[in-house]
Image (cartoon, rainbow, N blue to C red; front, side, top):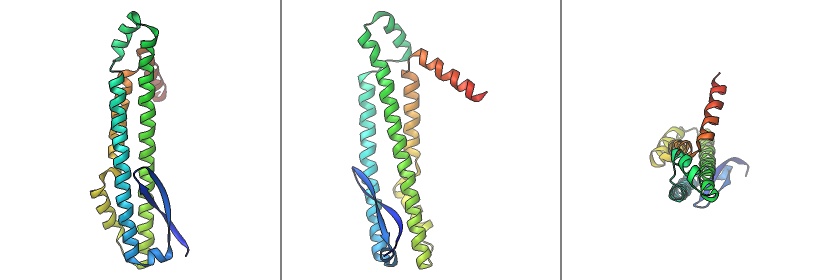
Length: 181
């Protein structure tokens, strides 16, 4: 039972990989049963991550809704403890962005594994199901194309830009200018 390629196995809290054996791929009924189980697991995993990320973003925004202009005003009139809340918000937004990018990369990896498993199946059976199955996957699991994670990263980038202290905003712009030169 030679393993052909990895297929993601997923639960709402964890993703791992299951090796498909030659026997799994040879039996169409078993293969498509495993394929559907993987789709269901991917959906559950993404739904749990999506809920976690949105709840986390909501909590970060509730804990500190200060803009960078307000930050300067508070820096003149406030205590040291309150002034530290804004950098913490920016750090939390950046951490969340990193986690969203990790999910984005994981989804790309899963999609590549999914394509490879379909390719292995088609090669073994002399069929062309990959295109149809991928089309079905992306229509029922639209998050797999990465658009949701990309959109959330754009929102996080904007939130970071708004929340960053003016000194940090200027530093970021000068780095961008150096990069573009």
